[in-house]
Image (tube, rainbow, N blue to C red; front, side, top):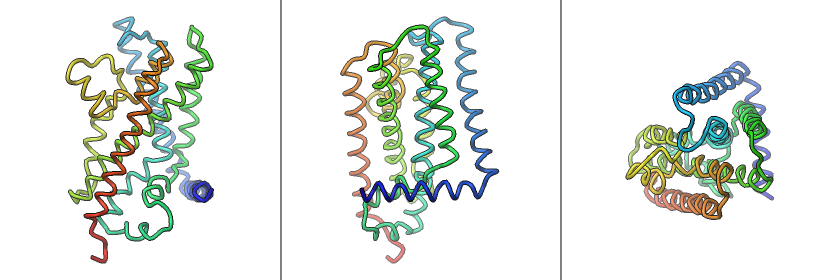
Length: 261
């Protein structure tokens, strides 16, 4: 309950701060809406030349697109701003201040900043997702829809833990962004169906850098056969990435040079 009350204070502070910079608030909403539009236009152009892509028609692909847009919006809302500050705290020695707090430092730094502007975009992404599902010519069971949404949330956690793993390299590299640029370059794989990749590339983005799992597996659960293999894969990889990020965090703290050292 202490953590829940603390997070409620984080939310209150974040919305209050966002209202003080209303131009930035509106600009960020417009920017993300433009990103959503470009994603749909890109695939619409592709479907002018083919009827199916990775075994999915345009209606199915629209659900996939809305799925990874939802993941992006949820990550931007809850985690993205906090990730941006991680390397800064470590390099400047500001991490000292947070290590003295009587709560988990990793929790505090991971969710302290809630992006109120992105929360509006999360609502837009949720409406888009609901619209694509409701407009689909077939019918989905409640079990599939609920499972799909839950797996998207796990996909968001996978995305965050992967981002965190790349960022925590700053403990050793001292770089201003860690390997964040590498992360964002590889993360675009999430925006493509996993089935289009073959051979070593598919293996890499399925097991080593599982960006291909984050949105494709939830969509496969909804659009194809809903198997427990999909659920176990997504949940298992999320847990594995959490353990990996926690291990790297703890190892990084041992080599961390505080501002007073």
